[in-house]
Length: 462
Figure 1: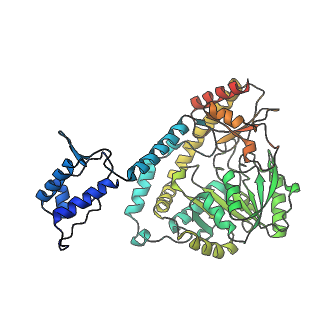
Figure 2: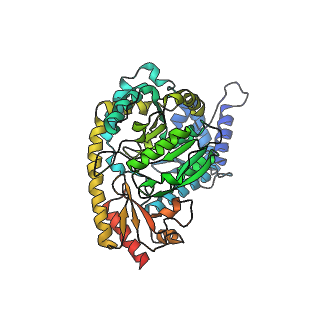
Figure 3: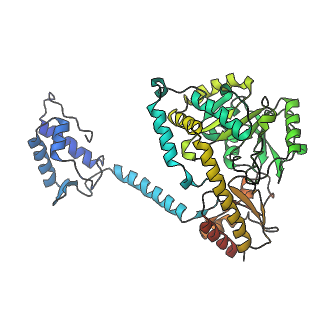
């Protein structure tokens, strides 16, 4: 208790030991100033000393001003009774965190990447988690397998075939802590790998490749995704693509371009990293068949449950070609001493009991309705000069006002007004591209908040 240790054979009286140790803990701030002290009975019981000794020490510290009694409430640490502000530092950090959260709440951010967290199926997830724990084998509470828990890898075989048409075996599936870890692990297959990266692309993807000392070649994009004729896969280890829903432009890679990319990759032995971060949410048709279906030996397929359920679960996965299983297993084992397994067991039940499919049907209907409302609000509030694109899939769309430059200080102007639409140019590494486009992430915002943001945006452009 409070870091106090009373030794029976120290040659120093229990009174003196308790007095000096308790006073020191107060003076260094180890016991938070103004906090309530535990009862004398509790202190005596835990330290295994007489309560009369505790009462005597408490009385002395009151006389010296380290403690104070509040009538009907108890004994408290006196304010300003410490020399080192140990707890003040923590308090400051907490205050800073609260301020950051207040600032975030005061800014209507429409940055993409967050689902509507109120949709999280708490009851179904709690049931799956409870059942997973109750019926788990004893060994399940030990270290997980390098590839992840077998039950979830097997469940994913059925899930991926049912939702994406991917035919794979559990041995080809690796579970990861989201897509970021998956990308980091893949880059370790080669030393200083060369990689073709979509431009624009998600900032964290570029940061990972840069941190891993990849030699990056940027590939130009249009509304249909990557432009194959402008790239060469010669001497390239990987191509990073988000073909189902390019981030941030939102396009879907056409069939012709898919075939051309696959031909180029096959000729040079280049692996395609396919990031399918929110392809489940396709509004005008069934989800597009991944590249992995067309070339399972050439594609490393990466998926996640962050957009479907919650990013807090930190559950992602890779489907990898046969010849990469062994090296990736070694990398994964060296990387993190294996991911936790309890959420993986719960997710396996969540899939096997069909909770995932019910949730997908419900959320797809919800987001389709919201997307329609957002499109109507854009034209109602901003006018018909604005163009909308990238809106057939996922949880964000692109707004374009031809001739407008959103790159020079416009982001700061929005922040000053309490809103944030990320300029597409923020994600671009080729200067001068996409200056007239904004990202509108609507997954986590109500239609009322979106209308408010659009009205503020309109005032900034008047």
